[in-house]
Image (cartoon, rainbow, N blue to C red; front, side):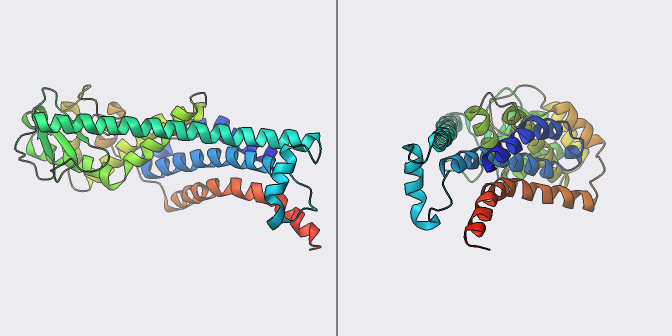
Length: 315
């Protein structure tokens, strides 16, 4: 029964939960909670698939000893020593585990390779185009397009900054606007937004047929920009950040977590007319739900077995 419950739970999150979360209005009022909700939902879906496969693989008769017999039971089930149903269940569970594990590892490897390539390109760019930096905590490169972005991963070699600003941005922006841009990029760094976006990109690449992960990738990319705007607004005027956003609108260099990322119109409207924050009770309820989502697959996976063990022990 637990594999079926896990599959139903994962399907409900993927087919109902993800679209409703993508359409939710409260995420604009609390983008950090929105990012947390997407991460929790994606982890819950992934864990549901893994535990569903594991539950099928560990199909066994209650007479087997839990500690000494798990490996033998798995092998017995795969070899059909229980019955045909047990064998089919074990094979299906093993196939699900192998498929999910292989897809996740392959996607993680591809992203890691792409990440290294991007860092190498940025190192070359810095060596060739970087000049004296008038901005503390940033590297200035010569480029005709105004842009500012956070470099993912370790700091640039020989530099103390992981933020890159183009000369065109310095020429176009006033000093308060430039300070707001740097605060925005530091917000990305402080919030570890690259890790969140990389996780969702990995899942979207691993399971391209899963619309829930594609939605998650789009929404997390959108929400981390709102989070960085909120962080920047603590130390800079919102109007300065809005002016910088307008001045730097455009494609710009291909970079991760760039100042011009996300939905520019949404960000501009939100900067000029900040939404009311969520009530404390709503934040608490959302945070509790985020905490429960990843725990639910674990609870469903062990519930049936716990009841079986208790019955076997005469409890």
